[in-house]
Image (tube, rainbow, N blue to C red):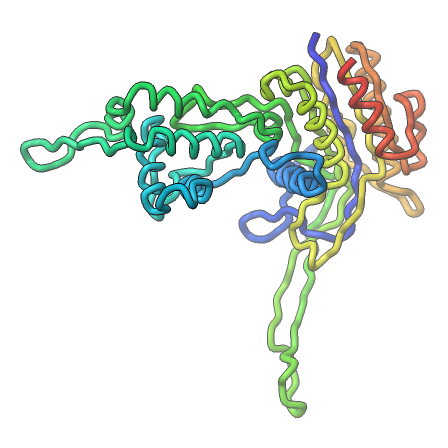
Amino acid sequence: MKTLIEIHALQNFAPSNLNRDDSGAPKDAFFGGTRRARISSQCLKRAVRGYFEQKKDEGFFKSDDLAVRTKRLYQAIADLLKGKRDGSEVLAKAEIALSYVKLKAAEGGKTQYLLFLGQKEIAALAEAINKYWDQIIPVKEETGENGRKKGNKKKEAAGGAPKEVQEQIGAIFNGGKAVDVALFGRMLADMPEKNQNAACQVAHAISTHSVEREFDFYTAVDDLKPEDSSGADMMGTVEFNSACFYRYAVLDWGKLVENLQDDKELAARGLRAFLEGFVVAEPTGKQNTFAAHNPPEFVAVSVRRNTAPRNLANAFETALFARKGESITGKSAEKLIEKAKALRTVYGGEEKTFILNLTNAKSDDLGTTLPALKELLDKACSAAQE
C-alpha cells in the first residue's frame, strides 16, 4: 500500500524578491486568469538542501548522508587522495576512469555538466581509482589516412577499459544513500541507467491573490564626498512584491526507503528533516535588502494511503481579495480547508492530517491541530511509518 506524505503551507512574505527571473524581477505566473507571485520549486528545494547542511552541522546528518551538485568532480577525487597520490596525476586518472562510464571532461578540468553525487559515491570513486591505478590508462586513438582521429571517443574509452575496472566504477553510481538524491532524484545524461527517480515532488509556490510588481528607487552617497558637493553617486531600482504563498510538496515513503537502499532509519531522518526544512527554510534572494523572514502561519501535513496526491492550488483559482480589516492569510486558510474537505469527501482514502494554525480559520474538522512544530513532526513521521 503506497504511503504519501503531503505538506501544505501558507506563508505571507513581507516586501521581498526571493526568487528572481533573468531580468532581476520577482518570478510570477498567470493562474486563474490573474498574475500571481511565484517561487520556483528549484528555489524551494535549494533552500531545503541548505537546511540539510545546517542539520549536518548539528550532527543530525553525517557528511556522507548528503550529496553535492558539482562540475568539479575530478578535483574532489584529487582532494580525497591527497597525500596518497600526486594531485595532477589523480586529475588525469580521474578523467580517464570516468570516461570508461561515458562521463567526458570539458575544458578547465570540469565535467561537461553538473553531477549530483552522494559523498559516498565520490569517496568510492577515489578508492577505485587508487585501487586500479595501474590499470587506468589512456585509450590509444586511431587516426585515418587523412590524419584525423576516427571513432567515437566515449565508446572507445569504454570499450578499451579493463572490464573489471569498468564494472566497478559503473557500480558505484547507485545514489550513495544520499538523502537529497533520494528525495529530489537526479539525471545523468550519459548514464541514463543510473538516473534516480525522485521520492519527492515540490510544486512552484504561487500567491493566493493577484500581485502587481512594485519598484524601489534607491540612491547611495559617497561617504568621502566633499561637503560642498551634493547629489547621489549611485542610483537604481529594485523590483519586489509582497504575497501570501501557497506551498505544496508530496513525498512517497516507499520510494524514499527504496532509494536509500532499504535503510529505514536514514529514511525516517530524511523525512523529518525534509518536512522541517520545508516549513522553516527560506529562499535567500535579496534577503539582505528586504529581510523578509516570515514563517508559515498555516501548515497541514497529511499522511495518506489508497489515494492519489492532491495539490490544493485550485482553492485559489479565483484570486482572493482581502477587504479592509481582513487577513489575507486567514482567508487563504479558510479556502484551503474548504477545498481539502471537499476533495476528501469526493475521493476518500485513508488519511491522518496534522495542523499548525496561527490564523483564525477553524481547522479542527480537517485534522488534529497541534501547538508546536516539533509535535507536528513527531505525529506525522510516526503516522508515515505505521
